Length: 402
Image (cartoon, rainbow, N blue to C red; front, top):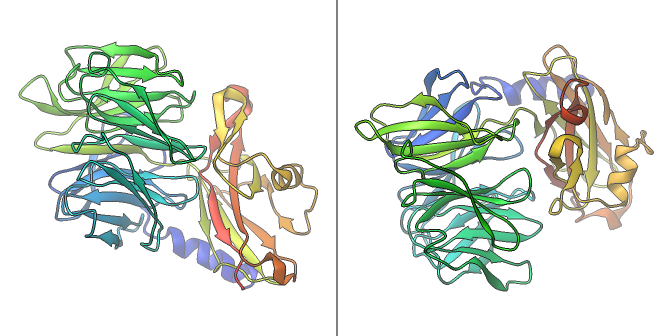
């Protein structure tokens, strides 16, 4: 595929995109995907037609949602739907969903005793048996190969070895934790329905109350964080005729109402990615190449830098309390410092007027490279942003084929 065709593929991959970077999405029991602007404007992005539970974004900007009928669906920015997995252990409501750095989906089984790890192709690659989980709306996240899950009055962590450790065992500390997410500082943040509070839990299991307020009703329907490190909270029953609200809790723990969604029954929320990586060619073989599109509608003419690594579990700290979702290895040093520009092409540069750039990875003609997975992520730069880091993308994996 030549450069002209790559440009056509990039345009096609983004054609019909409706979600605006920096906005928020909220899913509800009626199967509606709402798009909410930071200023409070609410529009309907998509009607699925059946209940949606939990929402996250993959590296290409697709929505990944659970359903009320035990399925996982993927919705493209152009509103095309694919059922990734259904049935089996997911025989009931999917409580939450999380896209890992490796691109797999973590999905709690309604039975309350396990979390499935599912590939984008629909294969179950890992079955995390985690006794003690609550079979209501679960909050979960993953970092460095460790799985964090809210349980029945508890917060559990399943280590990469498979061992399960209880971080918070007390119902007094966490009366009824539902939604949860790892925040930008690495602590786990929980929305607790019964306490009407947002708690922060550190690696030692110490619980800190970020905010407890009667403004919250059922503050357990969804939690994510945006580029400013503010937490976005879906509340299904905020006071005032059980009004569904989307709240924003900033770094100073000041609470504001972003939007009211009358009549909705909220089941999850997520911030729309502002910088995405999309595959523009099929996965390469030795002797061919991989084309990757880097895109941000809100960053035309911004300088960018990209890097690749052989895994995406640990994360690399960046200035401004940001994290590049790659592992620190030899490949990340080579690509970040642009030491092999003839192989890793266009890893540094300026986004065009549409906020786009195309990267190329030339694969040497060595059969032994087949089977290796490479993860690529990027950042945009702005001298006025904290630490100079403007936006950070999610990692895009591709595997060298035989």
